[in-house]
Amino acid sequence: MEDSQSTNQPQTPAGADGEAKAKSEICIDIKKLNLYYAKDTHALKDITLAIPRNQVTAFIGPSGCGKSSLLRCFNRMNDLIDECRIKGKINIDGVNIYDKKTDIADLRRRVGMVFQKPNPFPKSVYENVAYGLRIQGINSRRILDEVVENALRSAALWDEVRDRLEDNALELSGGQQQRLVIARTIAVEPEVLLLDEPASSLDPISTLKIEELINELRSTYTILIVTHNMQQAARVSDHAAFMDMGNMIEFASTDVLFTNPSEKQTEDYITGRYG
Image: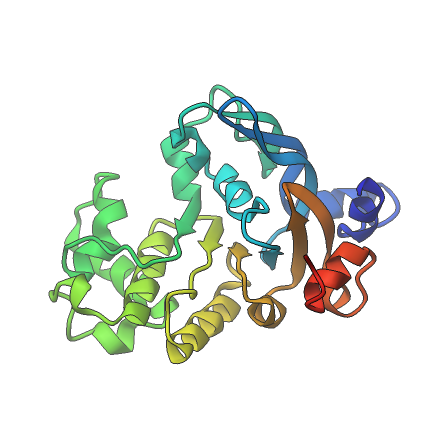
């Protein structure tokens, strides 16, 4: 397993300048990460991975393989689970997020998360997007107006809701609600977006809009997406990781992983012969 990982991670250019450049291009660096639930559930096993900056990385694999557990490590949402233990390191921009001095609230601002089912607040469209700024003490109407509009434009939703900003967000369609949640997330200027099956509960048209949005956001954010839909992973991601039973089986560029995987387990999963 380690050989395939080291082979398939983004390569480091030769020489000191190349190494420095490669380091700057890595956003999230995971070293020997192990995650345990309760006493005897070893959910993630020695995960080592370097995730490129401002690209889309997809995590695929069967249900229960550890994809979502790994995603929740990046903003320490697993801390909320009783008897959850972490060993190893996750560096974001060179800083270990599991250091005791880490400001968890700031980490979750920098690493935003969008869940499987849209979860807008029972507030107006405007107040949903403004919420993160208000809890930071920003109440200037001029600033809030500007941020709300920019975030909704970035989420490809402004034209659909510009005349409905005071409507309850729960009145929007499912696809609009999910894009509103993305707008709410990016309004506080995160560096990383975690998308946990963001389109699995949406209809095909809404799913397409989410995928188009991911493509538009990829140059601004480091995006990590968990999906059971391999076609979706192939369409939206630059790199892909196949996981099984808590192990990182293979990590490569999406084209390589889907057309010429180095591990038989990966090939069997992609071709439907898994299990």
